[in-house]
Length: 206
Image 1 (cartoon, rainbow, N blue to C red):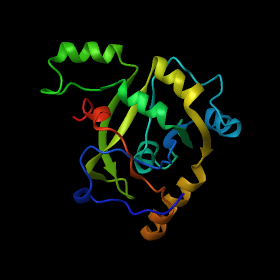
Image 2: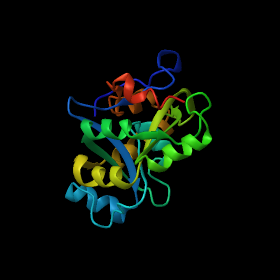
Image 3: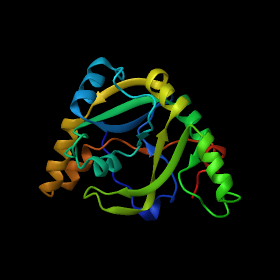
């Protein structure tokens, strides 16, 4: 992972996808119990034990993942995976997503939003981005929930690579604990604005 500087709220749009990405892939993060995460990383794919009929949330923001899993210390989230997936799949999920909550003015009414939510295989929520101390920032980070067709495609079609980044998470955490923020920031992934057509986000901006 390449070093980066955590952006400040004054320089970042409120709703923007920032991620480690290439011309063909985007990296997202998930945390699992070791009995699932370690075999997945070892085999480079999600095992049969990975429940494809349940919603799974993927996070392009590394620091939001650290906030969610407590630097890989929370029960059932001790193994952090960097999941490199095809951008084509990620964009498909955005195109077929619905916001996870009703927004007046964006949705005609709550009934319309609920119908959209029921038929959408993916959903989006925007949560406050985090700094190295895991404090909330003023701009938002995208969380993408996948269910049904989206979850199955994610697990069996979109994954390019699965990497266990747990030790890196612990190393960054220890540097933060020691107050060595520059060194900690140097270990963060290079999350840049993700190039996405306005049409893919127009229905997802809260």
